[in-house]
Length: 55
Image (cartoon, rainbow, N blue to C red; front, side, top):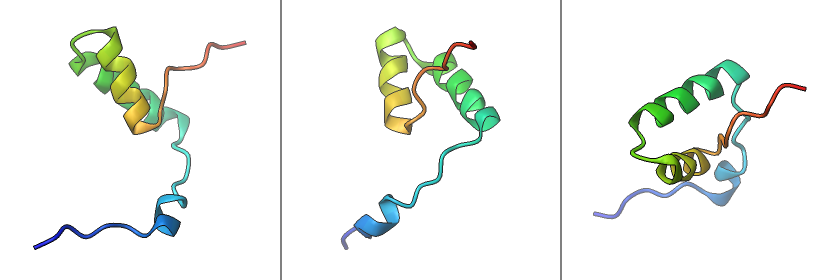
């Protein structure tokens, strides 16, 4: 049995995360990552990246 794959149109329809959700995701990733490189990799996989500094 093969896994169901999403259409390419569905993948492009992802909405940006609200700031509070992205911040929570960053905290979870940082808590479970074993080092900074792993943390950056996981954040990139989730599409959240590091937090932007306040201006």
